[in-house]
Image 1: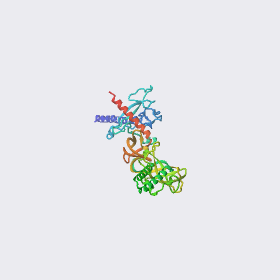
Image 2 (image 1 turned 90 degrees about the vertical axis):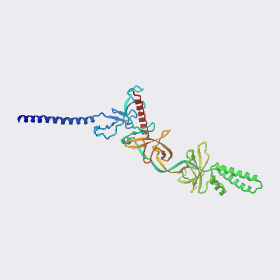
Image 3 (image 1 turned 180 degrees about the horizontal axis):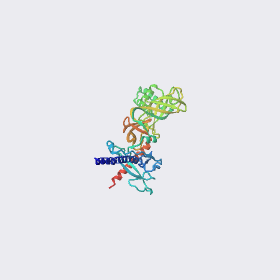
Length: 408
């Protein structure tokens, strides 16, 4: 009985220290793990070039900005990561500190004999990309630092405004051409009763020739018919008078397809008066001036106070309704010379390059034929920073891919 009691006491005495040891060891292991997370070496990156990662603080070799600390994610045990997505594959590349465009997939020295610094390039999942660009991820805080702003792709009623210059008409040539046409009409009417058919035929030829001259000077058929009914040339082409005047506005070749008779016009004459003058396009010359590559639009303008005089200069705005169109802010479209690119905000910092087919530009928007959809957000400010970032990352990925293909 005494022996059994001694054995029980001995077991208890051994179990207590063992339990204390196990507990302390577990606590120390947890503490050491937390300490290891806290002691993880810091990494540094550039706010403008997030792909550049360094082990030590300093300046960005690309733009010279001070590097900032990268917040490292704490590693989660595998048992809690069963539903997480696989991490993106990263490739280590090496860049010259003197020439950022000089990169290599292996460590070594650049063309100037200086050690190249490593940086990481995330490999994006396969998907449709614009050649020469790639999707990038810029944290929202960094977007604010860069001044990134976005606009919405929307369908709206578009009015294109053509802005040009004009002058109040002083046009003796047209005045005398009108006078000649009216004279030929009278001659032709009198010749109808002549006994000789040749006289009437010659008179008709004069009418046709003078009518053609009026057309070449910019008058349309309706205006010529109105002239015949009025039976007198337009004296306002020579002298001011009345409450209306003719204004000649220059329409450049690329805008001629938009300008039609009947469109409303608003004009100002800053040198004369702050008032605005309303008008209407009556006709557009069919022939371009080869020197200026422009045609003359004839505008009938109101002149109620007689302020406008022959050869007065005017600022002219022609309003052209285009109807409902899918548009993006003009600042969102980057013209590379061969294509048009926008960056679509995919949320959570993701910025995706898209090639778009653009139509005409109307004030502060571009009409879009294809490439984006209504409701999407596009970057309208700091585009050039994002553009360079996307191009650089794309070139890094290509270099990394090419290096991988040549490894045996």
